[in-house]
Image (cartoon, rainbow, N blue to C red; front, side, top):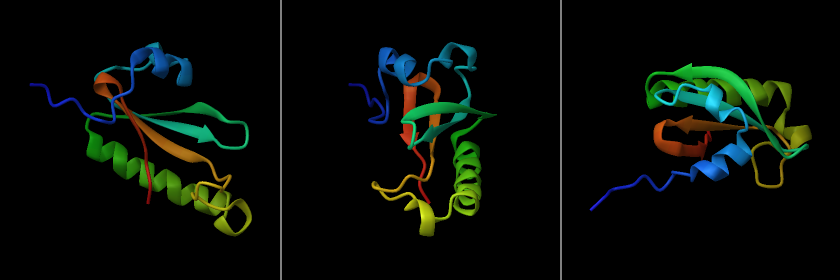
Length: 100
């Protein structure tokens, strides 16, 4: 009985979302940006050895986004907001959105 992580995305889907996937170290945790206005993912060129470090870095990125794209004018991280998003991509295809 496997305990597969529910955040796991099939490789084919990851390659569609993150075309530069094969350039990343599969043993590390990476930050990936998402431009809600253009509806596309973009590399943030930041990787970490452990998930907790990636989560901390993602929170810092979200705080910077709040300064660069204030909630008052962008709608923030709400579903209808256009503020950029930050995702964490980990070993084995784990891929999920970071939130404050």
